[in-house]
Length: 577
Image (cartoon, rainbow, N blue to C red; front, side):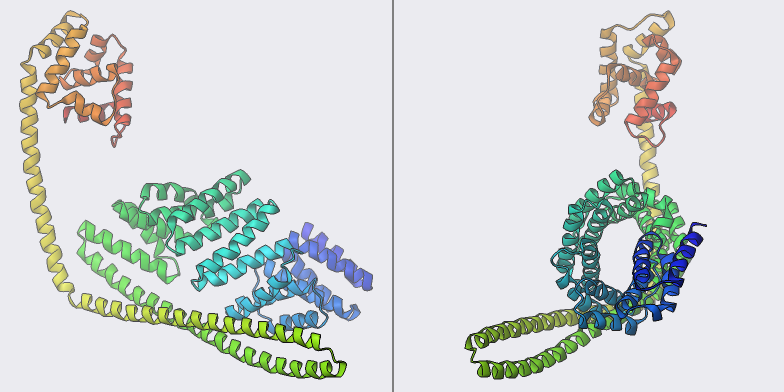
């Protein structure tokens, strides 16, 4: 209903507008873009239908606002010719107020059309115009776009430089949401650069700010990246702790990234059922690398469980998807190399054109200088020409080094991928041999388990002997005599019982206290349990309620981190020592 009222209001303005009305409509459109970009797209679309009533400046600004609204509404930007006309108009009119915005959305349009270097040129032009701080919000989003381009081409230092600039401006403006996004993006770049510790430092700052802002969207995005870093550092418990909230709010994060992370963490922790469950969730996702991760995890789970048939099936699919992923990466690598090459060629052509243009300027200025006899002006012009030429030479050398570096990197990647493909083919040829090795490994494990069972039986026999020997001791008989008579043990009798247990069961109490410090009450409960006394009898000897004794046993079970925190689990643990 609110949307209809907005549109009716704006349409009423458009139908009878003169120049002042058009300017007012454009100002209202700017506000609508911030509040509801989808409505702004529809409104500006209708406004363009009546552009015959507009001045040329209003027409161009209306078109620019339409592109801005389209981008804000996450709709594709494909009209390169349209944005080029807008940029040319503002360049010819030297409109330094709207030209930075035109440059920015020209860059966004080229990004949408997979031309990163043309986009970068427009972004850098916009940065030059915004250096005086006239529009801090546009400057910060511009820095983020430049950083994204550099990061995807492994120019991590340049990417971090621009993200840090964006963070400083957002911190001055006290824009908490943008500051969290800047820190999160910079942390991701550190992760790509294999520096998880620095990434975690930034993510912890971002997480604290997101919690203070009470933004669920920011918290789950930051926590997902924290979990990813902990997984890389093999701190799996911490990774599971931080991935908990993102897994509960999959509508706010990338579902495939979350499931891949959880599956690989559980697989590394040898929690096979959980790893298998999340890996199977990945099989239904469309991206190749998610399904590839799923088959890799399922292969290792099947091997651990001894299921050779499923292991071979998942391994075969993993190899197929790995080949597909390698092909995609190789294609992207070649495309990036071509981008660098095309960009370098374009720079060379631009340099030649600028040199040619500067030659004509030199001639014209020389003639004017001679006619006006202004030798001082000619000297200043010569100095500026040399400086510009040196800058262009340095830029050309820098781009040439970048291209060489990337070309070598891509050739190395292609060589490594070829070697990997050859290794995989060799592995497939020797599948039968691996099956025999797996069978032999299983037989060895079976033999090891039998040996362990024999050792366990021996330990049980020793424990039975120790238990029988404690029953023959005076301390054992004294305590059962006290129980039958309803008396309370003295401190000396407790000390004697502790000494007897330590001698019979190889330092029974010191071994317990080596793990956790015990109170006097906890120690006495443990000693009475060791001489096979029932909890109700323990309560009688210690003058306590049976519920109190049960609580002490449960607390000890929790204190020693047993699998089951119950009183009976503690009894079993004590009798097995």
